[in-house]
Length: 164
Image 1 (cartoon, rainbow, N blue to C red):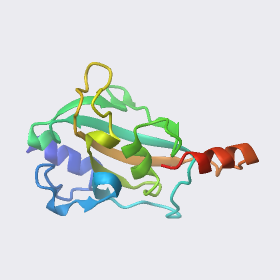
Image 2 (image 1 turned 45 degrees about the horizontal axis):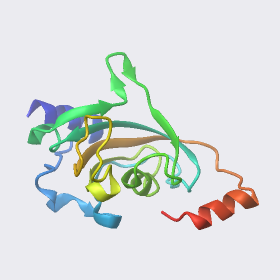
Image 3 (image 1 turned 135 degrees about the vertical axis):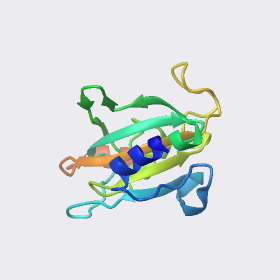
Image 4 (image 1 turned 90 degrees about the vertical axis):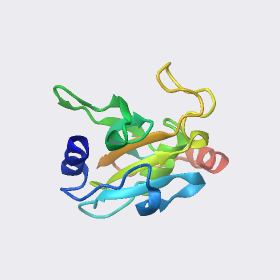
């Protein structure tokens, strides 16, 4: 399909992307997360550590990816280009499925994520556009790693007291 070709051009360098409805090519991540690496990382191949600033480029779909009839409900990509989304990873600023995924990626890597509700927005949903119990379908690229954090004793204690 045209959407699959466009997604492949952006996230897979032309590689054939697996359908979200056929998870046989996806790897099992923690807590029911499924992922497919669509672009290998670049550079030093270092994964972010908890509480490190990161930037991501993403699109969020409900009901599958575009080639499965899914509909885009959010994206960092707009008419005037990509506006990467920055956050501190591994401290609960984003849904748990994102924290778990981004902590396992390297800079420049892109993945398709299938995030079950219990590590997504749960039974509540979010913002009126994500219903309770929704499985989330993301195309995400880790575009930038900030400087490694230099923790003080209180921050280290907080990280120990709040495991993912």
